[in-house]
Every structure is written in structure tokens, then in C-alpha cells.
Length: 56
Image (cartoon, rainbow, N blue to C red):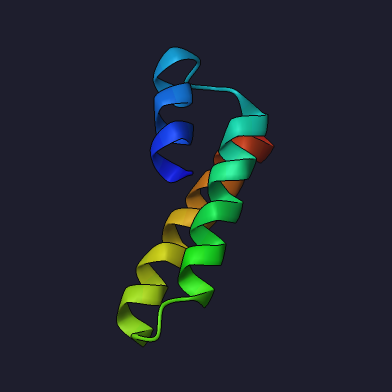
């Protein structure tokens, strides 16, 4: 899912719906990642996507 959303953002980089979905995908990935440090990276990516979506 993440790769498809990344491709969609290549076409339309400031689409808030796509950014929001990408944030949700990163959040889900973080919750499914057992390593705390790796999960934190996904949560950070999610937060960045959500912030960008809100700003659009």
C-alpha cells in the first residue's frame, strides 16, 4: 500500500487524502513492528504525513 501511495504522491504531491492514507499506513506498520526503535521511525513518518495533510 505504501508504494502505491508514494506513486500517487509523485503525480499529485499535495493531495491531502493521499497523505492521510499514507499516514495511516505508516501507523499500522508501526503497530505491527515489534522493534521499538523501528516502530518509532514509522510513527514519525506517519506524523509527518498527517501534518502535511492538515496543512493542505
